[in-house]
Length: 507
Image 1 (cartoon, helix red, strand yellow):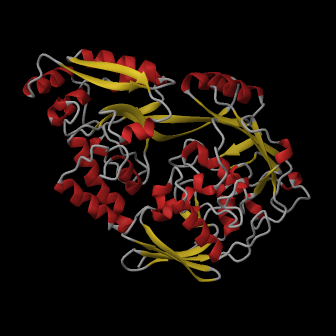
Image 2 (tube, rainbow, N blue to C red; image 1 turned 90 degrees about the vertical axis):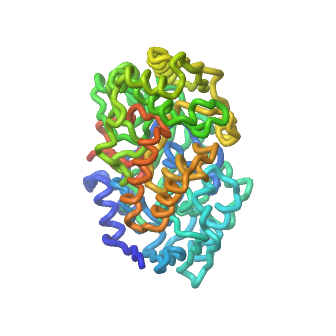
Image 3 (cartoon, rainbow, N blue to C red; image 1 turned 45 degrees about the vertical axis):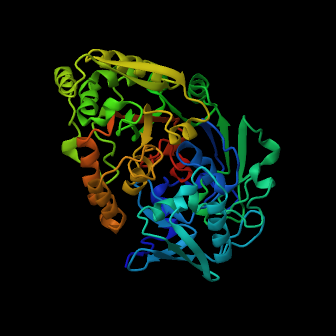
């Protein structure tokens, strides 16, 4: 039986997560609430404030401003209590019993309890949101009593607890779920509420501290403003000039930020490279031969590519799992060193000494530079890379429909089971051709039932896909988040943008 219990009081957790603030900044709004405001530059705001429509990555942070989650994910990735106080699996890891707080209300005055938690989880499963697969394994949610729910699964899901700290764990007022109003105004139990009069959709969203919030230690600011700054130049100018306190930049913009004295918070969240998805040769027949896929890997001078594309800000790699995932294997890191002669030999052995052609769609931002380099280095070993039209808003549907046999993309290095179901399993979006083998499926099945040993079991999955060249990883990307001296910011593992709880006034 797996037992999850709080190891620290919520206040102690918050004090570890957020830098302590001096008492001379405390306002009369409540203990723990600071007079200082926080202004963040964000890439895009939520399309809907219904928690069932919440996304992950950059877009999760705005939801954290107004919604609590069942579990709190600490900066190091560990899980702590939030709206849930304790959680416990049965012996088969198919039923999760969750005990809940009894002193929480939503911003509309409604009480948070087991019925509210059930309503949210049921709504999340039914609302067809972008992360609905987070609860794919959930068969039923039952309110056992006023402060206890059980979550019954069709099969063990090693990532469920992680998901309950993410989009699936966000709790909104049951009276507002699915309503037209919640699409534009959030109704949660979180530390801040939207100031509708001061907010302008597409420009800035303003939130003020809730006076009756249940955990004042998580309220470090009297207000939070999110300014939508999609353009990198606008975002750089805003953080350098002090219009915003923090924003995510790229290496080139980072040079300007560093020259202005801004502080860098960096971690590696994504890897970039080629996803060789048509491993059965359904569209590009040569990809069915592992030697062709290995040749593609040997064709790339990863160190040079990293320097030219991201000024060296990253780590070259040959594997799709990162060091924080639990599935990372050190000796796999340099499996495919730059060896164009070996690439040519493998192509010749596979019957393609005269060359072959592969197609990929174009991507925006820095990728045109990256793809131009990939095109040249593949040409050097006899592979013609045709770069087609840019991806569109239908990209996800196009991937699922097997429109692209190969893509160059940035992929999240998540928890082992999360990554497997994103990249490798037959359920994975980025395995649209449903590639598998009995050997690989047996490894995946072991990960699913391994509980706390899932990471170690996933290492075997990692070895398999690297040796069989399912992908051509290039490097892990340094995510570059800059902030001014007015605040402190703690990075969040596996997130490019820190959780809202990781910010505090500097003094």
